Structure formats: structure tokens, C-alpha cells
Length: 489
Ligand SMILES: [Zn+2]
Image (cartoon, rainbow, N blue to C red; front, side, top):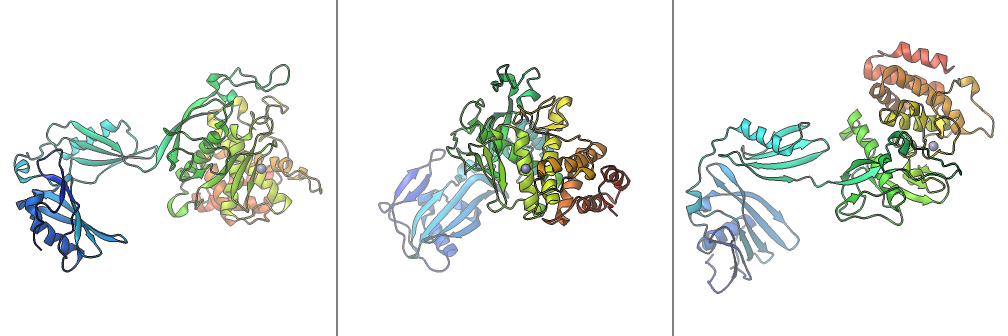
């Protein structure tokens, strides 16, 4: 291949060096052989134009990628066996085997000759990079030479830090994860949990506006959308109207349209992230795709999970359901059961277990965030008009046993569910949160949609045997016996 005539192409001058960073507006001679060999013929013929004189042999072939209309050959410049940051040379070849574009970030030979050998020990570079990221949790992985590090932290982030190999100065720091994080304020799980003195109902029976100290500032993680609440674990795409923010800043009071959507995104995302921390990740992930949420799905004071559509819908009657973290978690509980065990709840007992599990999950998830007085109650904001102190939709500490199960035609599965939630809550109090959550969630994998309290209890014993060698069996049996559930074995 012959060199291009000087008048045959246009050149974009480089900013850092005297060499051009791009030649375009030409068609080379037709090349021979593979894209790789055509690219090489072209570079050899045009090295003077590109200013990559004797350094050609220091170009390392990285990739050849094939588009529909062209092939693209990508080289990385190497210096003393190290790759030079961003020093790529790419050659672009049309279907007619003619090169039509070449880009070069190669560092010219004379500049390379002035470089110094790194003196900073690798361990020290790692320490400096970790300090620069500012998180101590997570792990550090060195992916290149000491000058290039990737640092993972929780909340998940991948930060690429460049450390000067002689002075140790931090040259740059970039979060390279495709996921974004947003900002928001939510109730955790209800306004009273933070604003202790706040009474949800005024003297006239009207719902009061939560004070500023009722909100908790949180981070929205797992976002894939650039402006909207579309994430890896959950998307609010069914909500109308939708909120959007170019900077993913969703801080707003509960009176503003959009708060319900933000709240439901946050709580569902956190719930699935918690499942991941329990071990349900990778090949054990429970949800194959993001859960779709309609945060403003009905004007009724009602919310539901649709097993047919696999969607969560929250209502706006009275207090908006999605504002209460525990209402979100209760509904999410149905989604979780359905994902493990499709069409859960087709008998009165199974339906009651579904309701009881949702209440249990909500209570377990937020117990550490609430004042003691609220621990045994769920949905205190959604159920602000409810009886009891504190108010709430339901409690988990009823004294009922299986004897009280209402088998009548008009029985309410939520009422019956309180026997099951109280049983699960006994387990939670006896075994602590993480152990109880893992055993109870894992027990669902052997259940079916028509299950019963007795089989559910046996499944919990089996899960304990599978996870802990039956370490908690005696305590679990005692709990089931006291609740009149069984015989279990
Ligand atoms: Zn329910």
C-alpha cells in the first residue's frame, strides 16, 4: 500500500503533541488480506503522516471489531512493557477494503524517551488510591500496573484512580460504574419513627403534614435511567405522571407529586438489595428482571401485587400507600413469594400465610429503624386512623393460636394472617433477624400455592436443617407447638 498523498486527507491536530490525532476525508488504496493485515499495511505506509515513526512495533493489537458496514482494528501503545493510558491507535476499514479513517493517541518517540521509571511501590499506590476514594469497606483490585486501580465499595461503585508513579499524587478519580445513584428523602418507615412527637392525626381527625425532621436523606442505588427511576432491581415505569430529574435529585416533601414514586423505588430497591446480602444473588437471584411499580395506580386506599403481570400497584386513597415503607414491604412480600413459589396463596391457609409473611417482612425489615413502641406494629402511617397505640394497620404480637383460624366463607385472610405473622415474629425474636429471615425465606422454595400452616412450619424446620444443621429445631418446634401449628414432624 502506498502512502496517502499529502493533499488526499484532512488532519485534526493533536492537543498534547505535535502529531495529528485524526486523519479523515480519504479513501486509501484497496488493501489485501484480513482487516488486521490491511490496517498494518496502512500504518506502515503512513507512519510519517501520523508521527508514529519507529514506535510502530510498540503497537499491541487489542481487538478487531466488526460493524455492519466496516471493520475496526484497535491497537494499544506499549512502553517498556507497560500500556500507556489512552494511547490507542485505531484503523477503520470499509467493506471495500479501503481505510477511510485513522485515529492516533500514540505518544511520540521523543516524549517517551524522557519518561522516568515508576518508583512508587505498588502497595503504597494501593493505599493512596483507597484513601482517595474515601471508603474503607469493599475490596481493591489492581487491574493494571501500579498506576491503575479499580476499587469496589458498598454501595456498589467502581472507581478508577490514577496515582502518579513517582510523586504519589492522585491524578484522577472516576466512578466507572454504569449504574448511577440518586438522592432522595423518604420516611423510614413512617414519619413518627424520626419525629417522635409527631401525631399523625390532628384534633379534627385530619392527617397532619409531617415535619421536616420526619424525613430521612437516602441514596437511591442501582439506577440505570439517566433521569427517571429505572433501575437494575426495580422500575417505576408504570407510574403516571412520572418524576424525572436530570441530576437524579429526587428530594421532595410528601406533599409533592412524585414522592410516592420515589418512596416505592427506594424501598423495593433496598429490599432486593437486602435479599442479595442474605445470599440471593448471582445464580441464586430471586428476581430475573426489575419489578415494575405503579406508585399511583388507583385512587382507592388499596395496594396489591399482581401475580399475572408481576407488578406492584399502590393506591392514593387517604394516606398514599407508597409513602409508608412497611406498606411497600408488605406488597413486596407477595412479589417475593410469587417469584419463589408461583401463584402462592390459593387456599385460605396459604392466603393467610401470604398476608402474614408480608407483615413479617415489613416488621423485620424496619425493626432496627423504629422506636421500640412501634416494633410489633406495621404500617403506622398508612394506618394512622387505626386503633391502638401506636396506630397501625396490623400487629405481629397477637396471642392467637391456630385454633382461632376462621375457616368460614367470609373469613379475612389478613386477620387469619396475624396468626402466621405472630408465629414468624416469635421466630424472629428467638433467632434474630438475619437467621430468621434466611430460614423463613428459604422455606418458601419447597412450598406450593396450596400450602398450609403445618406444611409451612415443616418447611421452616427443613430450611433450618439445610442452613444450620437443625441447630434451632428445638426452639422452632416449641414455637409451633405454642401456636397450635402442626404436628410438624
Ligand atoms: Zn397483602
